[in-house]
Image 1 (spheres, rainbow, N blue to C red):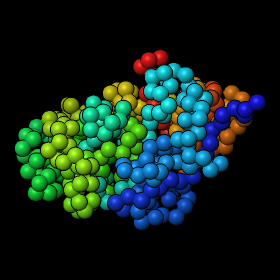
Image 2: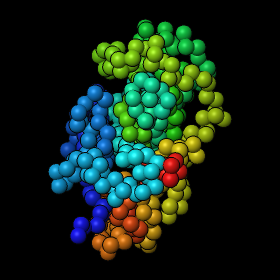
Image 3: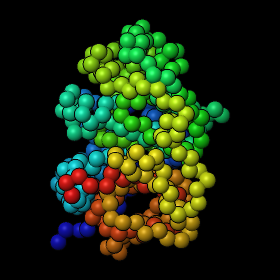
Image 4: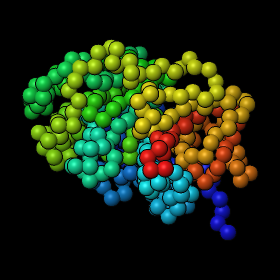
Length: 344
């Protein structure tokens, strides 16, 4: 008789990136910082663009998580999820520690990704700020005023980085703030910002500001050419009222379960902060990725097993683990796919 699925603590998974960072990840996890280790792809069944296995999570038993899910999609994901999304987890989670400002870029929506990348998923994402190392930690999202496609094309052609960045809204952030980034929205993360990032399970980044980061324009437009790639860009203006629909401040919320993301994110993924504060919180069965930010505690499964949690742990939870109970003085970010309302 097969053993029931249980939560699994994962090692770090830091494929090499083009930008610096990673010290905050190392401090959280207790490992050594790597010069180009600014992203930890947690419970990833997604590869880096154009790569065969880079980005995939390997389980402690040596299997790729991707292969384990494919072998038992209902056990890992649940029947309703499989009916809605097939064998995809429909989620990619990263720890991202920006040691330098990231370039101005954007991501395609589902329809664009289907046409140009033969993918069911585009790349909507969200950031949960869990640390900052700069006094004026800043992220950038959406054009402050509507821009013509011709103007943006000129900026990209000339690699006019000051104009590209200057046209965006700058948003000061602190731990507990969250920012939802719909597909198409131009954005960048500033130096010294450490986030838990949720996104659709792809690596489609269309990078307007490529010259000082990627070295070649082809890596910016992913082989599409910028005339095509820029059709996926949201050139509309995002004033303060509209921007407030993307940003939440949750740092002062009480213990218990706190929904972290703006309302529009629920179609793509879910995230909450769990703080049992020495008590216990019941968790419904679900595929989930847990990031332990502080303290220590335990997960008790429906099968009677107990899984220890400590600061810096990253844990993948199969749906088949059943109902869980989280106990202890611990703070956990729980990341989940969208509710499986499509097809099931």
